[in-house]
Each structure stands twice: as structure tokens, then as C-alpha cells.
Image (cartoon, rainbow, N blue to C red; front, side, top):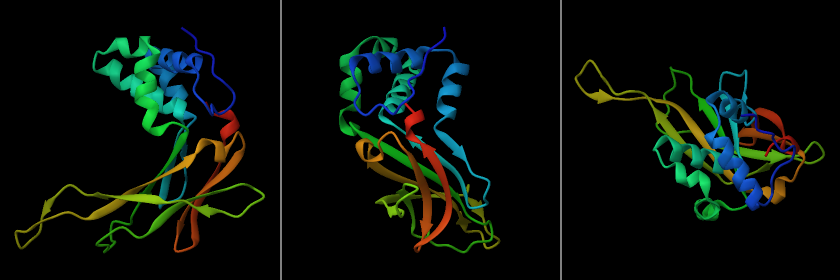
Length: 191
């Protein structure tokens, strides 16, 4: 089964787009992996390792894949359940960044990293960013206490799809007003 892909960001999910996302969720594993790979940017730096973009279309594919894994194939056969699942995040793009800390860090809490977006012609604008710390597997210290260390964080920010449009946008990770890492994502090439 070969699925054709749209060439522009879907700003509003129609019934046809919902059915296409559901069909993709039922597709072969290799086709689903190829689809998701377009939304993930691996960065070469030691601090920010990955930026992930979740559009409304991709969010529905992920939700439908989860239903298929649980054996609920009927979710991928009807539009109403899909519309209900998307209702809380209608018209929203989620940007995630994976931040890794040096193993010798002494952080007690995650530094105030933030995700920022901009275009080639405009300055970066910092978005409201949720920082979710990631801790190591608990280990025993010499004195017998059980400890874990802060090894990284996941940053997450939501932005309106209409605001991003079908244009290339710069997505950056900022710390105290300084740019730590950035990449350009062409939203005109994503579903």
C-alpha cells in the first residue's frame, strides 16, 4: 500500500485529511517511520540533541497508531472519534526539544530553557515553554542513600498552526536570551 503525502501544512483537518491520517496509521511500519522521520530533526550539538514537530495531522496519526496497537482498529475507520480526539488541540502545533546535560552537572533543577520561533526576516520570539526534567535511574550512594541525578530535559511549546503558516521557520532553543541551538523547518513540506 503506497500512501501519497500532502505537500503543505494542513491548517484545518477536513474529513479527507482525517481519513488519510487514519490510513497512514494502518500502513506498514516502514511507511509510518518514513512519515514520522520528516518531523524529527537531529541536531549535532552536545546540548540540544533533537527537535520534534507535531502538527495536527501528525498528532492524529500518532493517536490512531496507539489505537491500532491496542487492537482498536475501528478508531481508524470513522471520522467522528478522530474529531473528538483532536478537539482539545485543534489548530495547534507542538514543538519539542530534547536537552541533554553534562554528566558532571550539579543542577538541582533544570535551567530555564525556552523554545523560540522566528522567520528569516524577523527576530526570534520566545514561546511559553514547559520544561520537564529527566532523571537518571536511581542509584545508591556510598553512604547508603538512594539518589538520582538530573541528566536532561524535554522542552515543549504549543503554537497556533495559522501563526506558523506554510513557511520556513527557525526553531531555536534559548537559555537566558542566548541561542543554544537552532534549525529551520519548512512547514510547507509537512502535513
